[in-house]
Length: 512
Image 1 (cartoon, rainbow, N blue to C red):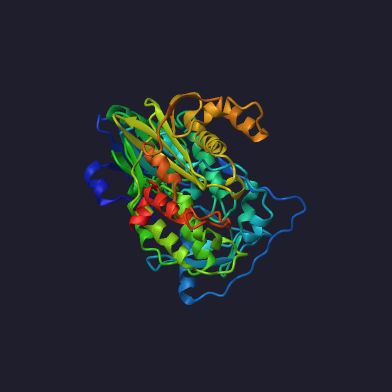
Image 2 (image 1 turned 135 degrees about the vertical axis):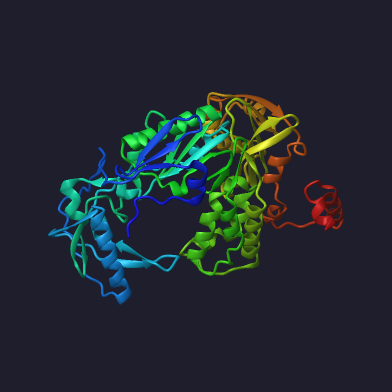
């Protein structure tokens, strides 16, 4: 049978909600005694509707009825009945008709899916971008209390424009039906829903609420603020007639999981379940598995020193035009990323009231950069960045490579650094060198023009003291990357061996 609301025992024990059964209203009492009322039933009825615009001169897509097993037919009858009772679908005589199929869910039940591939092919695509997740996480800086709201039947809370409803028609063994609400499978649905929710919270976005798809996060600095913010958010959702899934509602937490991260007032770290899935991931055997592995690890690359250089030996296998050959270097890269993610650093949440520190070092083969904040004598990392040096820049001077690293760091963290005073730590006196040059290339001129926009204090630090950035850029396994053939006298070889033993980068390699 259909359910209007799912409530967990923990919520019922803690919140002790009251119900007005005749009006189908839930009353939730806040800690200060104020009452919030949530309407938990009824067909979608808000001012936002989803339009399906067709490309000019497009042909009406027509599907076919797939043969189904008896269990699928039972599931089809049951789900058609539930959707009809809720008012989400209606019988139709539309010329459109997309096919129906079933997907097996984890619990063994069947989920009905509509194959809207034909309709999506003739639909004008919505280009509205989804927000960047790292930008959303930056908004919570300095906040101690968090509440996460998950909306129930999220897509089905958006109505389809009446003149477009016939386009959602789907064919079944028991007749043709159309959706009155937005179904899953439409190409513009993932952007339509957050667009509607952003309209609801327009005046409060980034102030105390952020939205990604159907995940709403409320954040506050004090308990009193948080109660007020939650009440405002719930009132807006009630006013616009959105329903909340209280089973997934987390209220007043000081640590909370959001978009794959565990965030708190001071720190951010990858979600334990996601880290475990990376740790237990089997070795990739095909191109699609390599892409999947890098897709997951790349999501957490900000937590990993040397991510690009550790992954480099196996990234070429993600290309379809590359013959498959899993070498020892690929295996080392796979294990290295596994280890790096499972032993990740704990990053600080950016705090606009504390000055930033950017530490930079560029070796011949790599660039290492860290954005951090100073706490006493320690640097607490906020984000790492490491990039391999392109082949065309390997032969450039040290000063040019350092300036290139400086330029890339400023552009990468522009949203943190522009318009703020910060400290820049480097072990090269590049900026002093550049001002003594009478002739500069066009590239150097562009870099300097960008760098001059920033307000920073330059601190020259010796390489061995600039530990984080120096370690990110100096990789012993790249020291043989450039190969040049030349002759050596008998005296030169022993002297080079002795020099390598005393070299701070290579001495550990020789000791092992």
